[in-house]
Length: 78
Image (cartoon, rainbow, N blue to C red):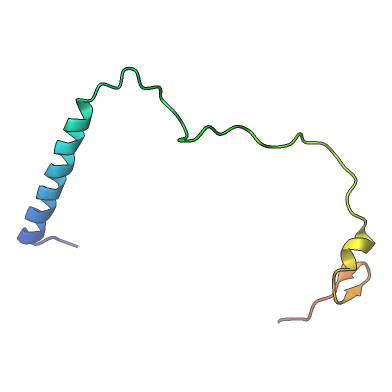
């Protein structure tokens, strides 16, 4: 894909505006601004990884409409 002259002029002007704004931002004094990796104070909210006994299979399978040989039975699709 190639650009025509009008598009080249338009994009060159837009790029110049972006670069000029970046130069303005570079003039700001950020020496007392602490770097951050997230805008909000986020902490690890995960629980400890502990092995626990799961729900018995019969209880889980009781939620399905069709069960056969300890598994959910579903209609064949192919």
